[in-house]
Length: 242
Ligand code: DC
Image (tube, rainbow, N blue to C red; front, side):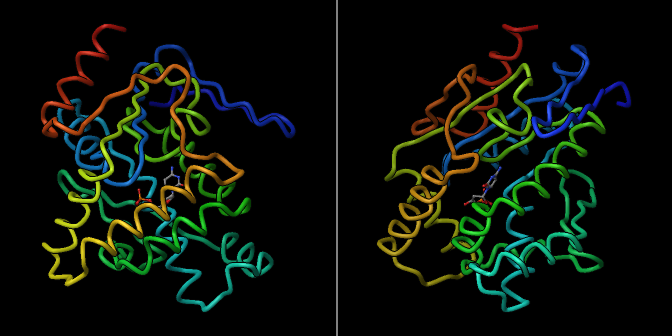
């Protein structure tokens, strides 16, 4: 989709797209465990759009910083890492692998140690600038379902189809706990809950691009819904607009 128009002006950095392409961009935001990754993936498959997991990008940056042993307060070294970052997605059938340079880090970024580090790293100005730029570049390349924390508010504020998913705390903890158990992790449910609350707090209260629904996002409570039901709800919401 090369008809996307990108214009970056001075410090305000406005980003423009043609109205036609706005309909090919779906944003899904929400907290950990709200089901957005599963839903975004299924939705992208149904619509035949690409799926962009923006959390994976922050996780990749966190992995690079963590491996380099850089203190999270050391903004100079973090800026240096960010300048040399080479993050890319390689699509394989329905799914996408994420690469840091030549290394496939798809599994490594899912290590529990990266959960909180990614949240902390994502609050750093330089990191957000670099990752946001990359996300917009990917957004300019074709129809997309973009999933994350600030897709509808900051990265693609002009998207026509914006959704914000949420679910009760207990259900979100259950989902995350089950996910960890499936991976053979012997973590307790209490610890999962504690980490999730901490991460939500960091993501929602940071100064830059905090997690919050865009004013024009449609809210979906996924507590009692299956992923397929959420996808149906989103598709209905999209039709109402087209
Ligand atoms: O969705 P996730 O758990 O993979 O995301 C990891 C962290 O990345 C999350 O705690 C906050 C950050 N993040 C962000 O700040 N903005 C996004 N658009 C996506 C993720």
